[in-house]
Length: 224
Image (tube, rainbow, N blue to C red; front, side, top):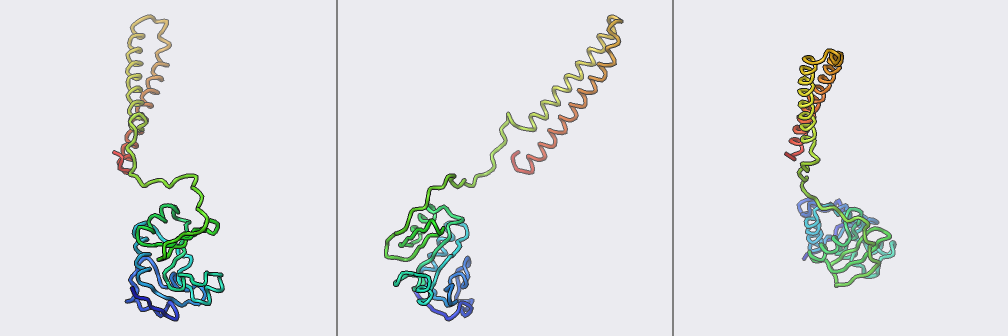
């Protein structure tokens, strides 16, 4: 473990900065711009970022003694050693975050639900603060898109409509032929049956179009 202090975060050599998800400006003192780099603490912070797989919003990291007094920090705050971080919980589940932080080696935990952040440091092992309230809705896991249910499939619905309409059109045509060969009193109904046959044909074509469109859309979404 090594600790290096710079008068300003802009003085940190690029070659000395090995934590890709953070910048010296994020870790520097918010009051003076000075920075104290504790490599063990930064390694664990990067490991926590990698483990969670999402950004860590650093509310406070290193604090100069003067800035620590100005913000009412503890007289022996780990922030002044560069071994403590206050991380926003705006994009994290606090329970999941704390579990991951313990797994990578953080020992001290302070919870501040009213301010929306959690303090983590390298120890000694201790905890303080109020618990975060249980979220009304748990975070949904990332899962692959489910295959479309066959009974609700637009392809099935479109194909079914086309099939029914085709049978209906054929039935009307047969009825026309039967009526034309029977009683002359029923012949005035034949033109209406012709119109009905074309309606069935139109429905069949629409059903086919819906089925084709659904197939193309399902292919694009990887569900077929």
